[in-house]
Length: 299
Image (cartoon, rainbow, N blue to C red; front, side, top):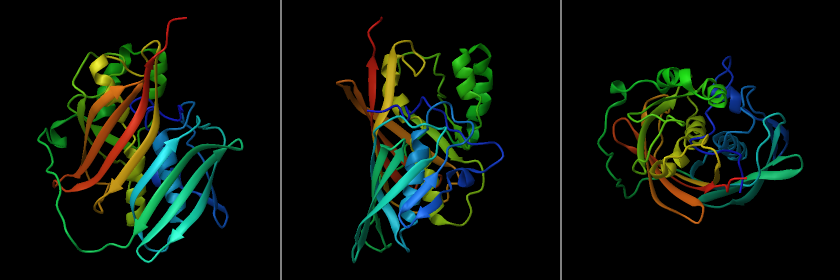
């Protein structure tokens, strides 16, 4: 259990003078060891999507040409944004069809996160997908940054500090997160999103940044029926694990629709499922996450 992130709680962030591609870059310090840093704007703990993305990028540094089709990871300890993260890659298997990697993220001599990912060569074969659900087009919705500017006028000071930070992922929603002004709602949500700054022509980096963004707004969907948010007194939330399946390549500088639903909450945990569609309706990726959700007893 960890508070390395709480999806829908820790905001997306990156320094204003650098792109997200630059923020996520790693330094190779040995054949299978890499070092990454967090942006100066990190709000006291590391955003989980950052560690997912950097771990996937570390794995890609040991892969020749294959493409990730799935990843599964666990958040173990809180991440400290003031010190570098060391990523250790275990070259589990290089097979005829699949390549497997395991990545451990380390700070202060301890694991804070681990990821297992599988890679393969693209191939032709059977193909079907679920259709993109109906909803408003991104062009009909306001930028979440503009929505937050209005909401921040009367927000708690902690929320002002967190939500006024730069957002490298542009998001638009019909029912934007308000954090501190909410009531019971159905455990479903839709968000349009894309990377604000150019990613470039590296298809792997588009996948890495999509993985970064996949951790956004998930756990908040499971909170919706209870009228709670990350700043609710006594409420504790944190991402526990995260899984992602990449179905088709995509350009994440273009708009994508992220559809969430939470089919279950019990035993202090909430489960959230996500589907990511390109604007033309192509199903690009599927996501699942379980998170901690509990009310602490009053002191």
